[in-house]
Length: 214
Ligand code: GAR
Image (cartoon, rainbow, N blue to C red; front, side, top):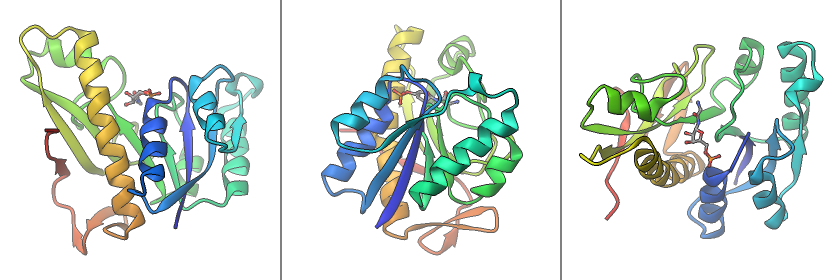
């Protein structure tokens, strides 16, 4: 059974989607703990409602990023997890943190990487006149939003879309994508081999694509 830590900073809707998929038996796993860098993150309430352990480590309490990251590592390692899932965790992590969890650290990003690393992804997709947008789950490396992409979900950009309407549909796609990737990890379909994802034994040449929702 896959032991999971989830790191959040906010609403935690992806955390909710993962908890729901675990409860439905779609992920052969267990969430061992949820960690937030913000005490007011609503996702903490979602976790507590399910009886999941929570921790708050406030980045403002640390003079240096390195010390904050070491505190994160101490808490996560105390939960003894197989995978660390970044789900709207809005802090840039040090190379030491990323190295500590190499091959066990996943992130979801609201764009079709390598497009739109960083912030304001929906606005940037609209401004570029893109016809498609979506989300990506990737292994985390020291390069921001730059690690190998495992899977993506693509949605059409509609003529009347605003930043808010697009964000809402990307969120829905995230809630399908992240649980699916974790299910693949839990059943052994997805593996990490020397910096490259492997899916069902084959190195991934291009990201897996989640079919559109019906
Ligand atoms: C998600 O849209 C996620 O892709 C994004 O934060 C949101 C968190 O929502 N992450 C990033 O932008 C990371 N660079 P949630 O708290 O409701 O899951």
